[in-house]
Length: 96
Image 1 (cartoon, rainbow, N blue to C red):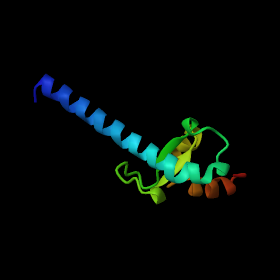
Image 2 (cartoon, one colour):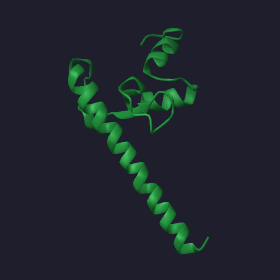
Image 3 (cartoon, rainbow, N blue to C red):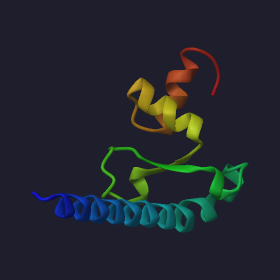
Image 4 (tube, rainbow, N blue to C red):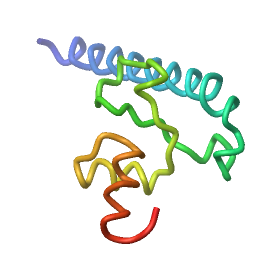
């Protein structure tokens, strides 16, 4: 593969990744955040969207968690599925 084609492929992959992220954020905002706003203490822009099954193409609302960056790092660091599992894990150590 030539250098130009490699660069084009990387740019195309970046565009696809941005579209995926935009779609999951739109879905999470409309179908989760707005319907459960009382559950969130921060503005939506302060949260990241976590895909529970780690499949970024699966934007079903049952697969999305709206969480803080810190929670997201903990979920991936402990190899957990989502916020519910993080809370259960924390309860075994301290509070959630």
